[in-house]
Every structure is written in structure tokens, then in C-alpha cells.
Image (tube, rainbow, N blue to C red; front, side, top):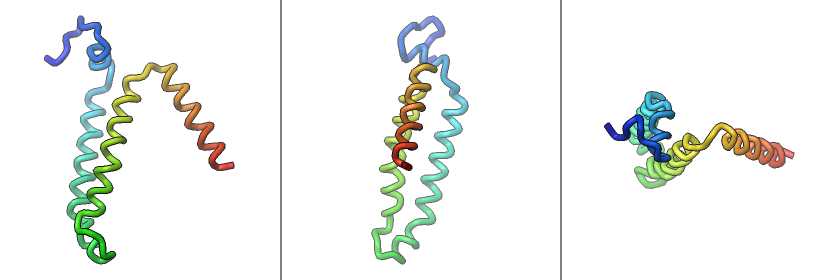
Length: 97
């Protein structure tokens, strides 16, 4: 057991409140996506005159911060997520204007 239910630390509370099955499913989908990019992108990259694993490198470079943000947001409280979502929404509206 990684954390006991009586653990009152920040990570212990997060571990018992987060949907671990959904996070596992997301990691499986990320792994499948990386596998598909690995198998499909070298011919396209060669056709475009890029390195064989150009698209794979880009996928991994974007995936790492995305996973860190996903885990970071999962550690926020409901009110903090509401504030963050509101700021992102306002930023998107301002950007569109």
C-alpha cells in the first residue's frame, strides 16, 4: 500500500480522493498514442524531409508537460479549479476578440 487511509498528508489525501482508474486509463491512452505515433510517423517525416522520429519527439515534448498539468490540476480543490477554469475561459474569450 502506497498510502494508508489514515495518512493526512497532502499526497495521502490526494491519493484516496483521485479517480485512480481514470488516471490509469489516461496513461494507457497516452501510451497507445505514443506507440501509434512511433509506428506511423517515420514515413511521413521522411516524405517531408524531416528526421525519422521528428513527430515522436514533438509528441513526447508536448505529452510530458500535459501529464504534469493533469496531475497538478487533479491536486487542486473544487474552488481552485473553478477559478482556474474561469480565468482560462476569460483568456480564451479575450484571445478570440
